[in-house]
Image (cartoon, rainbow, N blue to C red; front, side, top):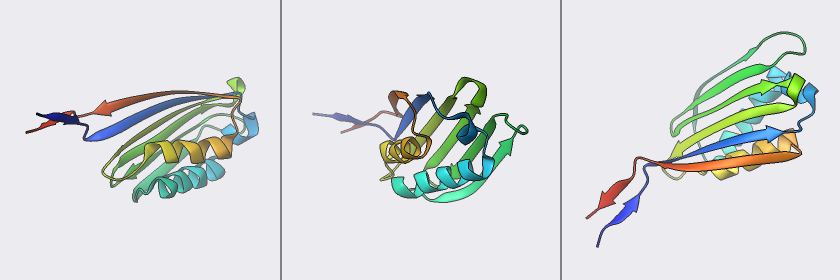
Length: 121
């Protein structure tokens, strides 16, 4: 009998109702992304966070040994789109929990997709 195991797990989350000041602070967002990676048991290889100006959104990405975490924010809408893709023993749900603790959204809509389903024989 064969089982199907994913190579990685891809977690997408929409954080809604986030205080706008948190969504435009590039330094704090980079620190939150790095803390999320550590909480998930992932290893950061490289990171870059780009602020779009005073009171504007931020785009950030961490390249991980286990894949990546990215974020795009819209302070004017109190919204952040988070993308966490991890393989191996890293746990994307722990990364998201860490980011939820930082951003304190009123609501979080999550979707989890297994990636690279492989059959063991």
